Image (cartoon, helix red, strand yellow):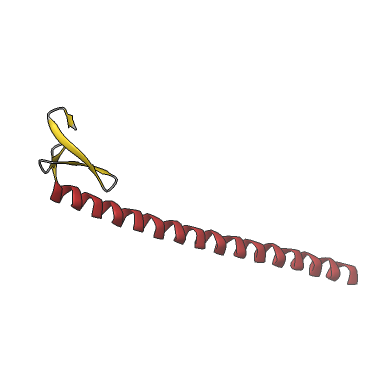
Amino acid sequence: MNLAGQSLKFENGQWIAETGISGGVDRREAQRLRRRNQQLEEENNLLRLKVNILLDMLSETTAESHLMEKELDELKSVGRRRK
């Protein structure tokens, strides 16, 4: 297929310039960009996992804090009754 003076072919699910240049980006640069994109996607996934772990830890700590507050209130009320 010819588009804007570029000869393109569809190969392995991607459009590839037959001349080795795709939109002004050569194959090596395109490969470098794909690798960088993959690295960033992996980093993003790791960061999402870390955020989820931190949210779970926060939820657990909050629940424990509420239980301790409730227990403290109950102990205070028992102490007041004894006076």
